[in-house]
Length: 293
Image (cartoon, rainbow, N blue to C red; front, side, top):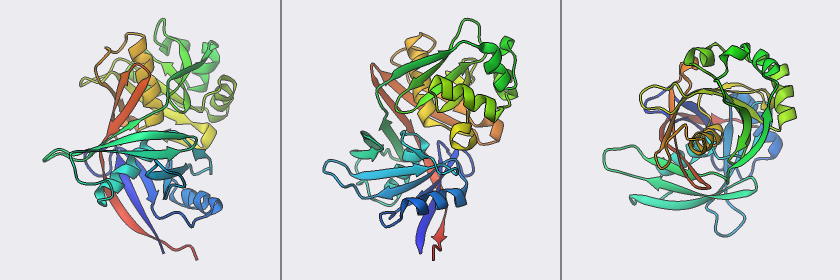
């Protein structure tokens, strides 16, 4: 039997946030088995915890989408794994513990924070920010999103930005426009391929409750119709908002996502120069066993 858990990430109560399927003790699983398990769970990502093969690394993580695509960025796929590790007592019990994870080609720091009466909070480093191509054919872009050029935010530019994974950030004028979008997967995937972006993050700075942005995420390139909370996209967006002055420097950037799916999430990103740190909490909502033979 192989254990599995469901972790609601960026959530403060069950059945909100972004659900992650987590399989610990995955060292003996083959890659085809990992892909089959991810397809079985059909969550946006399934993460497998492995022992590291190198010094200076505490855990190695591998994550797959239902389409079998491996995801290397540090988002909810990694944050949920560390929430589980903390819950299992595998990260110490001090008020602040720093550990290191291997995801793809990167080794990134992770901080586990504990405060009396508060849920454990995970703070993870992401990669160094990098700016990619802009998408200037606004008619084609908005049509692929079921929108019109008038829905775009005036003066803003759709551009690929990365803090480990490059996503196309598309600025819209209102929350209503964000909620109205309907992705046409084939057309959107072609635009993303030409721009060098993996997914598409729609956002408006017309947020509420202190949030810097209100967002939705589509990723037809890896088989994700829509994701309720996307850490690998929130990092690049926080960088873009901070560097353009649309979010104040030195202040945590709070991003709302998942409302359209009925799974509201709030993501925190701290940007200090080239250092981007994603943080959040969550809870384990289910567990069970896989029968693989």
